[in-house]
Image (cartoon, rainbow, N blue to C red; front, side, top):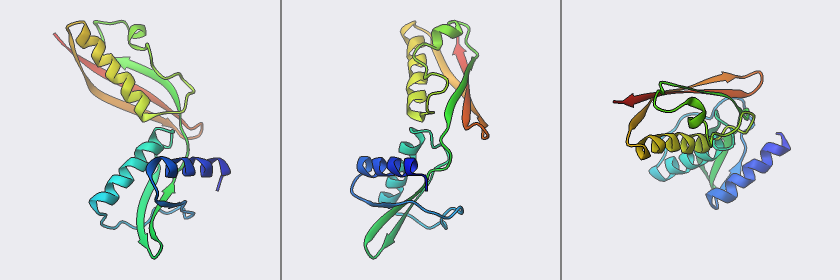
Length: 157
């Protein structure tokens, strides 16, 4: 295991609570099993934390053992943000909507991108207009670990 990934795992453990964490070594995802509502919430929090650190394909599993619950995390590759494209915008110029966007080359953070998109929708609302996100598309360049984003807006008139 890459020591750098290991340190991120411990950051996750400290951020998510007092669960015992270990990193799965197998390249296969753990077998599917029914999880409790509490375990599903733990998986969701860990998955979101991984996604906010660029690990967009992280696999998180909670298992019950003799020593308590274990959270297994397979981080996978860490992605950086590539290009960002906005389509469907007519009311605002693209450069006006790109204000506050995470920079190309930054670690891809689902949370930061969501906050930026929320800011776009607020800009429309503040101007007395309405826009929705009709679709988003991520294009992955696995060789370079880059994810490029296209946001398609739908403006209401």
